[in-house]
Length: 159
Image (tube, rainbow, N blue to C red; front, side, top):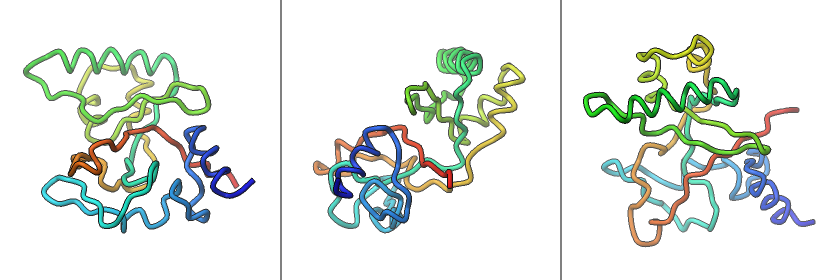
């Protein structure tokens, strides 16, 4: 199999290739592909189909069923109250067939103000160590990039 076919298979399984791969499905040179101008993510070069252009950072992954249920309830309660700041950036995805919620720091800070289970509270205080890039910018800067997708993917860090 060629590298491109292996990389597409990796992407199809919601995984990101190691940075050493250097393909469009890795985080290699992700900072050189775009720039943020007035809260809009703009490309600095031609972007290939399915190429990674932004990454959520310092994000908490919630995979435990009871914590997911608590998170859904807290999000619904907060978002239905007109006088409270809504949860905006949390996304639901699937990694290896398992439901996962990714909660960025802004949403975690809001949820920690609410009455939530001790398990979810503890989990929201833990996050990955990768810095984010362009994840909160508007990804519809022009006709060519209006269809950027927001997907949940994981990096396999096992050695």
